[in-house]
Length: 127
Figure 1 (cartoon, one colour):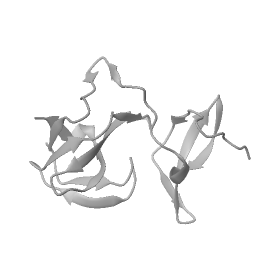
Figure 2: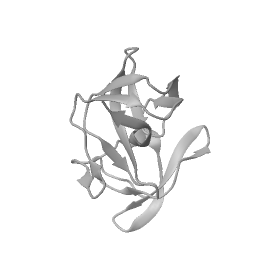
Figure 3: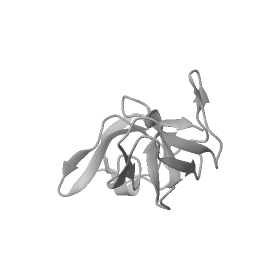
Figure 4: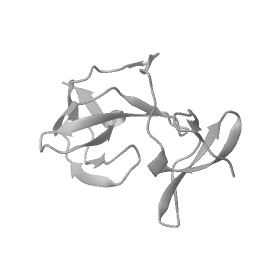
């Protein structure tokens, strides 16, 4: 067992698994491997840009391009509701990249219904 100091960066190595009523991710931190519960993690990305991806600015209007899409309380978190293709939202902060083998990019958004949460970028288009 090891204590991880707040602010430590690591890499997700798997999709979450459920155990003891919690969601756990396999992580790599400073070359060591283990599991962390999702409640103690936040996405950390100073900005995601690179081949094939250009981050959308905060305040960008987006539309669900492949619904129904779950609005989540955090990346990979519990569903707050589903949104049909064509539903609109606005990004409220910078994108976060969670590398779980798929490198899923998530955006914090405010939906047209006024809900706040996270959408996976693969199912959104900039409008």
